[in-house]
Length: 359
Image (tube, rainbow, N blue to C red; front, side, top):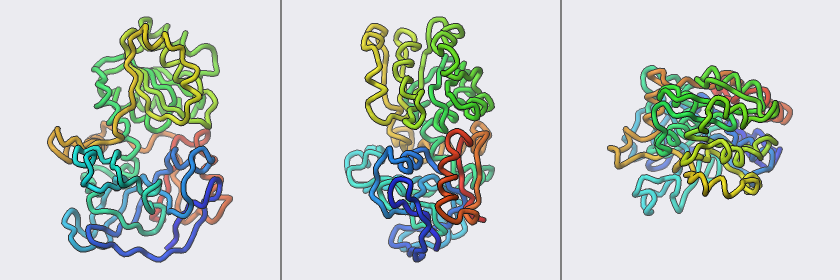
């Protein structure tokens, strides 16, 4: 089978590999759509180091092709969305429903085994979610990113009608704009890239500013005179303006407001923060929450972030992929030049890149 393999920064190659065989508790899936994550972009650019040799792809949907032994969660032919988290199921975080914090595992296609950018992939049966009737495989390939917005909305306790600023309009924050719209929030998006500002407006933001055109803080204050109730920060170290986002978030948040860190790479942006902004304002600053929890305390898997996100897509509360996304056929990618162009398209030419694995 054909697979896209990481061999180091700027060196992602197609390789011919044998079709894997599912073992006990595993399922063979034929990927249908696969999102290119901004984590993949960071690996490609060399901002994140990863051990070479694994098959990329951790945002994918597919069709079940074969079952290993002891599998009862799905049937051959099922259309599924794949949760890429690998877990042991035995450590304390796993037992608490915090699988991302598992002490023994990782993410498919990132740091814990082969992913979905191949003609076939073997995945644990526990990772599969059947698609609701009105959710397409293309939409389902976007669930992993949208789940992060679902988690941030739930764990961040965003209140109906809040004033919210989204700093950095990558896919996490674009889905945040949709959740916030459904909650009646007033949303301002900030990003230097026009394609992403347009996507944010299409997804429910009321305003979208370019931070390179005048003082963003003054423009935000004109619309939110007492400051933002919540500021959601998505850092991307290949966007120079993102280095200012954390300090900006502290300036524009209201007294006793919240700063939610959606993405964070490195310490440089935090060195620009004036400490008195945080303690004099009594700000609450936190990570957006265990990526996407299964929420056992809320009634089990059916109410976890993944299922809630799938259901929101089926209802039309969340749309996917974002406006301005590039959908590229897997068969059209022939070699290094095509791969370079694919990763070069993000973020300036496409709000998101998705590979159509079916053609």
